[in-house]
Image (cartoon, rainbow, N blue to C red):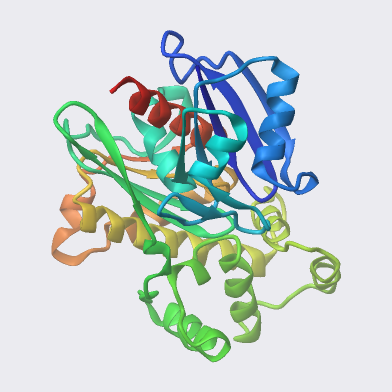
Length: 330
């Protein structure tokens, strides 16, 4: 029996699996508010006490970098170490994955209902697969074919240098350089990036900020949902919010195209994270694919690549289970 988990700063999803049922059929599953626990070990103990089960091994996708079997969860004080966790929980083995590596591991298991297709093309069998996931930050990963199955490869590509594609984005880069010095793709293509775009468009006079919106943003801890919701209203959308989301979509399309070229993603490009499912109308209006294919001599090639949005909110848990079950059965 395998314990799999998706460990985030806000919530931790845990589930039990076995080889017979596979990663799409959890035996038991529960969600816990992460901040109410002192450690991942405390969350797992609560779950196992609730289920009365004792797994043999565990695999966790963690919202943060994993180095030498150790991880720190973004926005939490948890320090997680594979051997320490295995000893504390009495497990044979514990595997830690970056959360994007977990999402990437889920892709071979995703079904039609788990996806929204932006470019309907046939994948090349065994072709590399790219994953770009804007959530709170910008995660990136890719998968390669080893001859019998796809294996996920981690990346910190979201922290590479932002490359503007037009005059507006040049102005955005200059504006953010004044604030941060180095400007990564994450600064403009994530939940922390959307308010940055909004601030620049407001400061540059692209559109004015309504007083009611200024008050709403001033009282919010996270302005991103407010901006997105006011951009996508079917009637009377906020001009400044709409310009922000349009700029974000173009930037996301450009970086997804970059990732596709760097990995030669003939197996497809997948958009994960929390933001894409929430802005599907803006992604589907053609702006994303225009930026995605805007690669000069490779424009025609880009249009041959399948592009999908991952709708399944439990993809990271599914991927952790797939990785853990594959590891245990090798």
